[in-house]
Image (cartoon, rainbow, N blue to C red):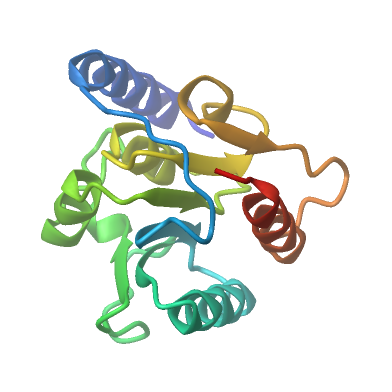
Length: 181
């Protein structure tokens, strides 16, 4: 990463920390059975990741859940590749500020929506997804162990050496099914 980009990212993290201090979020434990609204964030740059998330959304909708998936496409412009859908929204680098903070109506709506459950599939630790997840008003957040998630989530899952979205999804489903409320 270039020195300029490092400075921009540092300013972005500073802004995130300031916003995080203002965050007033109520936490409520839930599992796959009790969650009514579910938000999913993920890196949508690779087609395989999108297919995994699509299958997860289908599974959750079969459980009668309201689901919204927000994908970050790490490209300058993805408007001709990805089309918004009722259950899916996307943003790309064109919708990031100079400090890598995502700015779009879809992102703002996602952050403000009080999901019962937020599923973070951000394995690569992309800062735009970190920003959204950290400031999300979701009442129960789950993702892999490490980075920003350890201090901001109610449930983190250690996926060890198997750093794949497919494995993370299977572990999240497993643990969210095990939780008894």
